[in-house]
Length: 160
Image (cartoon, rainbow, N blue to C red):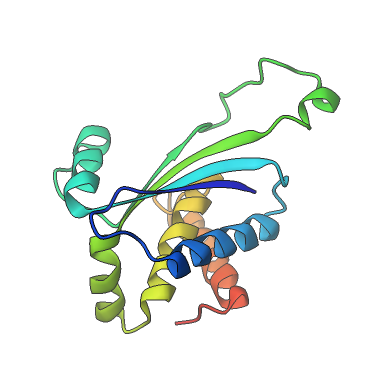
């Protein structure tokens, strides 16, 4: 997977956490059998910045932990180029994930697991949204998404 990780925080995200995000998302991509030329980005921000995104794009004027912006949403999307043999070599950008580093530690402490588990949880959660999973559609969809999320994290080694 071609993954761009952007750090817009004041303090900076450690190399260890940068590498963890890259590794867990590549693992998740393999679990979903995504093409290796899949592209996406993860941007780390502080609470003020994620609150701006949350307000501007979701109409909720408060910070949140993670926001996903999928490039393609729903079945109404169409390919401009229809020759699958030709397009399989073209990278597919699935979207962007925005993560608040200010919230990761507090949520990890509240939930009783490591910072790394919470970081992995948030990026996998956002990643699944980019791939069409949505826990807000109903109980069955929520169970499907959360079960897959747990399976990916557990198999990766980031258990609760």
